[in-house]
Image 1 (cartoon, one colour):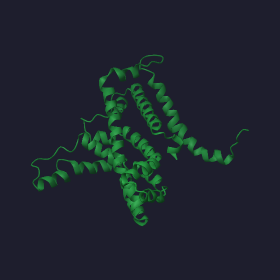
Image 2: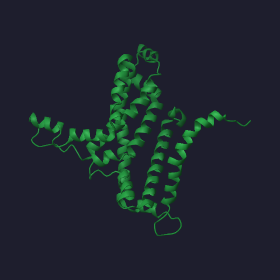
Image 3: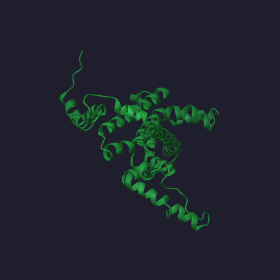
Length: 282
């Protein structure tokens, strides 16, 4: 028996289709076609993709970007899990909502303003260096800005919220009686965390990890501004191809390589964690 969709269904789907088709699907199809073309040549070719693997700076930058994105994702989990557990299982619900609202401040301010805020904090004449020099711990400013450290710090600060919220949503549905029963039976805090809390929160952890990883690997502002010229990021290579050298064909190829390989990494994470996409998405 064929399933029939009511007019109301199509009416509700219309805004989604109008958003997906002209703004996402059609431009991506056009970029995919352009990625198999070379200016001045007729027909389709894979030369743009071969250039990626033949040029050492391209694929080394991509490997570094993936490695740092994975590292920031792990750090985000380390920071987010205790915060999410505290807000859902320790602090009073009356204060939990207020503290959660405070976590949203970076999104309210915006990434660009937040990055400039970190520049004020980490600069040679910034808050940290000024304080350390004023108390006599250092004689000259520490190089805290325009390096991998400042880049990772900025990426972590902007993405950790997207790890906290999914974990909080799963922790809120965890029955406290399970933790109390395990504690009454003599289980240690580490055992409760490892055998009950983390397995139960795995859908939220995987969901948050996917969001953070995709946000970090596709970020441009934090690596470019906080990292400086020494911190190469693959999105900067894509930007240069499009707007510096105006090589849209190669830029399209690099963009789809980033999309394909990052999607493959997400698929591997889902398989290794034993989670299904529909459960993680919910």
